Image (tube, rainbow, N blue to C red; front, side, top):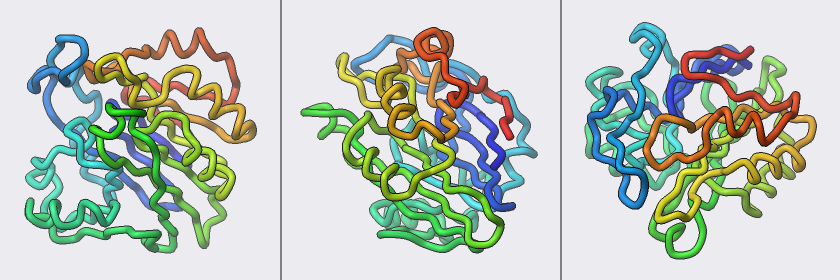
Amino acid sequence: MKFTAIRHATCIIEFANIKFLVDPILYQKETLDPTPGSMNKMNPLVDIPVTDEILKDIDAILLTHTHRDHFDPNIIYFFGKNVPIICSNEYEQALSELGFDNIMPIKDYVTFQNITITVTKGMHGTGAVGKSMGNTYGFVLQDQTHGEEPLYITGDTVWCQLVKNTIDCYAPKYIIAFAGSAMINNEPVTMDENDIRKLLDKAPTAKIIAIHMEAWNHCRLLRSDLRKAIANQNLYIPMDGETIS
């Protein structure tokens, strides 16, 4: 497995010789309004540090959900309407109405070029805030032919029973954790340092890559703070543009 951090949740995963782009947002720095209920800073906070050629050279898009910090409808002008988009079946109609015509909706799982992709669920916060955020999903990738170990992409979620169940069921070797401690009205909607610590305890042999930090105004957890809070050889905290093999 080869991983390249792009910005926020946007990343490239090369798994069993297939190149996936996760949650593509290509907005220029400071071109979007702040997320309400958080720091008053324009989004995104930083620019994308990689070239267009790297982003274009993909086999499919994995889309966890359609919040504006995870999905930019204007990618149709960059990737074209035929780019394969793998997502929960909840988003099929909306993506089709935007003009995309190669959507692979998942109710339970799909197979893409000998990779089984299972949709997973999470909790995008708790209580009233969590309810207002709506559904969010992740994915488990399982290789049928090349011997890659299972990969789990958490999506936007806090630590919860749904995450525990996914780890118990699939025993992932790699976990891409959406961290950042994103806050809405001071309520967390993605993993903070305590959630990452619980993730490491639950999956002590897995390699965990923490992303979703320092690019959107509602994300409070800095990379440096996460490094200070947790010293674990299985935790990787890449900078934007960094590749991990």
